[in-house]
Length: 90
Image (cartoon, rainbow, N blue to C red; front, top):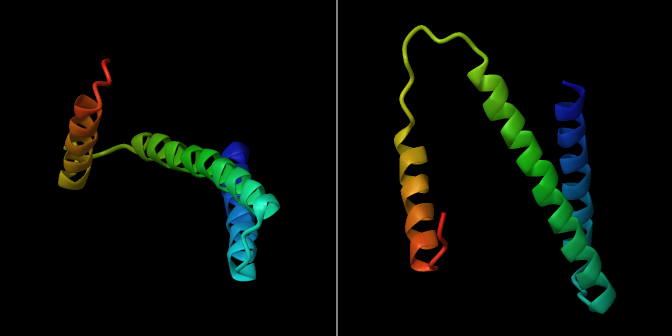
């Protein structure tokens, strides 16, 4: 659980930093580099948080076999269509 907590704390901290950058309203070259790095790091922390939530959610005992939600199925199909149209081969 400590790794999950770290992901959440870091994602919250990075979100606050990004908010401060956006409130400034000026986007010079140095600010854009900082903003780009913060958003890149936020992606990593957010993905770590989400993967842990999915993993921990799957550890729960379920009374019946669960089916993927329609939202998940739609997102997976849309992603597959985009990757196929971009000629990404798996």
